[in-house]
Image (cartoon, rainbow, N blue to C red; front, side, top):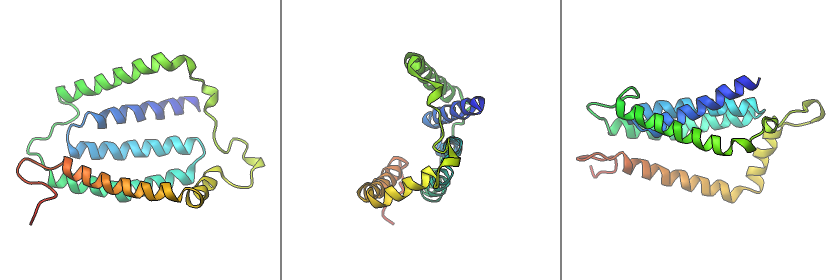
Length: 173
């Protein structure tokens, strides 16, 4: 069980380094899908099945459409892949940075803290992640509204960042 969690967390860090190297919008969108899937796998492993399903559906339904739209409008004639030398250097630099920070704070990390929210499931009448969703809508309404506004702002930032030299996604028709 611990090897599966190590594999998922290492894959998550590797996928985030691949996305952060930003080779091309095409590969970045594919990397984000893979990272979202691996993050949902980590949540499932900790007992948050409902939360991971909702996260995966909202992410793929909402944000990936924005990334696909902006990547289609910012088409590059010769996109760089993950195998090119500059991008590979960035990925290795990010992995070395994460590894060095992990070595610095690794003494305070305990594997005993990796417990699931339903560790003693036979004593619970409800699941832990469903209670969190109820709290989100009851006392977290303000943060839910702020999250929607942040996603709208993220849409405009992404569309502005992927604007090309001659044409952009926010252009007058």
